[in-house]
Length: 452
Ligand code: 5AD
Image 1 (cartoon, rainbow, N blue to C red):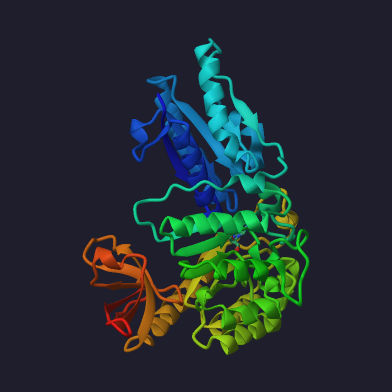
Image 2 (image 1 turned 30 degrees about the vertical axis):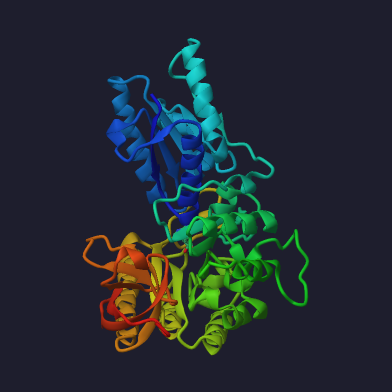
């Protein structure tokens, strides 16, 4: 009775938390299964960033709870952001849930499952729920364990939890708590161990990675702790690429911009959340930059790396967004020349500063603005991908593509490329001549290695 099925909603931090929980469970003798119907324990690691994400998880949990009629011993756990956001009130809607575990307690899930089992064995009535959404000092350092697949090339490493920014739309400070960074030595050690196991690309994760360590480490010679961390990781032999998400535009000080010129493992890709191109809305969103400053940053990054690929996050339909504001967003969106963008329709979140703002935008208007930006993005991605046809790109080979016809990997600019290869190339950096491009992927052929 120890088969665990884990379903994850939301961001890469959540994916990473789930992976760490799965690794801890496996070490304790639980089995992680991929078929929900074959499980004794179902864990939903949830997201609260938009209402839709919460509704999906609630719907799913309700559905699973129906299985308890046949199998009263089935264990259901709600973990992560929605557990943190709603706490025990989740039980009003979902009385059959056994565990409600917040974001700072997620590493305690294995212990709680053991506890639940022993309580039940000792006769505790099935139906009592364990709720733990307390803060825990040091919890940011508990997400360390990995479940690496055979020949896994790319891995995520959590470097920080929480966020001290005050973006008026965002629920993250409420669900993830104050900003807390892991010790630099622990991160470097974890990355080194991953590289020893064959990992070649590491993506550093945090809600605001650019603020990493700002209270724990001194700036030395104008170098922020985050860039100090990048420098140390850059020194790990065998590690080919370092990426990170999510940064804040404000965190791109000159040292980080310059790092893209002197630390080649960073590649040529940055995620730079814009949210809005209207200064009036940026102020209302409490984003401490202007459209002009943002575009200066884009120019500075492309001065260091002319081919720099950029992705972004945009919110359409923030309260009070007029046609004029949206026009401003379109302008910046076009000027920044993105390869990729995530466009979100504003979702009102309880407990956020924007919750009570007047001027809610009708759903149809949000949808229409969403479509406008997606249309622009599609054209832009295609144009930028097509401009790579005829060039040679350095690709980190990840493995067979989904259809199993070719191999796939990513360029320094984080674009996916498909090309014929074999298993001996997994984890290696190879030159690929780009022959064809679509909006989302490139197709090419490997070229002989220099000196080979
Ligand atoms: N509504 C819509 N999108 C949101 N995001 C954050 N909060 C909200 C909200 N209330 C988006 C932002 C953020 C991304 C992860 O989710 O664009 O960068």
